[in-house]
Image 1 (cartoon, rainbow, N blue to C red):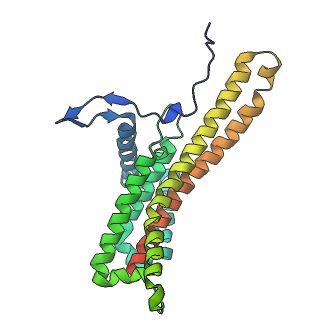
Image 2: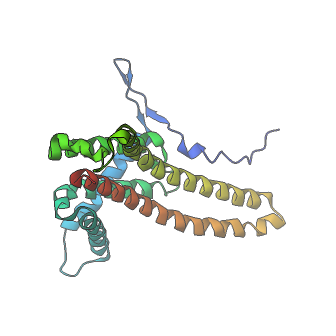
Image 3: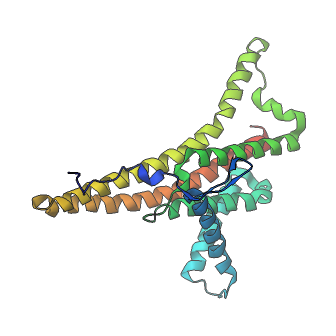
Length: 253
C-alpha cells in the first residue's frame, strides 16, 4: 500500500507546466506558468508604481515612502557607478531593478512560480544585456572599443595571450551574471521546501515528533525572512553588475 503522506520533491516547484497549448507553423508558443508569472510581475510592477501618481499627498504615505526609497537606491547606484552619464540609462536600470525585485518577491508567495529560478530565463536576460552593452560600446567608441581587450604597454610577444585572456574574462560575465541569480534563487527555495517537508513529516507522524516539529517550523520562518532579504539583494546585485559592465564599455576600463 502506498504511503499517502509522501512529500513531493523539492524540485517540483520549478517545473514548467503548459497552461494553454499553442503551436503556430510548428513552433511551440504555448503559454506556461513561467510566462504567466513574468507578465503578472510586469503588470504588478506597473500597477504599484502607477499608484505614485494617484492621489499623491504632500506628506508621503508608507507606500509613497517605500517607492521613494527604492527610487533613491537605484538612483544612488547609477550615480556611484556611472556618474552623470548614467542619467540617460536610468529608465532601463530602474525598470530592470524593479522587474527583478518583483519576480523574486512574487516567487516567495506559496504556490506561485519563481521565474528567476530557471537558468534559461536569467541567461536570456543576461545575454540580452550583454549584447546591448556591447552595441552601446561600439556606438560610443567605434573601433576603439576593441582596445578594451588590449591594455596599454603590453609587450608584443604576449599580445595574443592577453587578448585571449581578456576576451574570455569579458565573455564569461554573461555566465556569472545569470548563474549567480539562478543559483541563489533555486538553492534558497529548495532549502525552504526541504525544511517545510521535514516539519510536515514530523507533524503528521504524531506522538513526540509532532511536538518537536516546532523546531524546523521556527527555522523555516527564520529562513523565509532571510530568503526575502536575498531576493531583494540578488535583484540589487544583478542591477549593480549591469551598471558596472555598462560603465566599463563607456569608459573603456
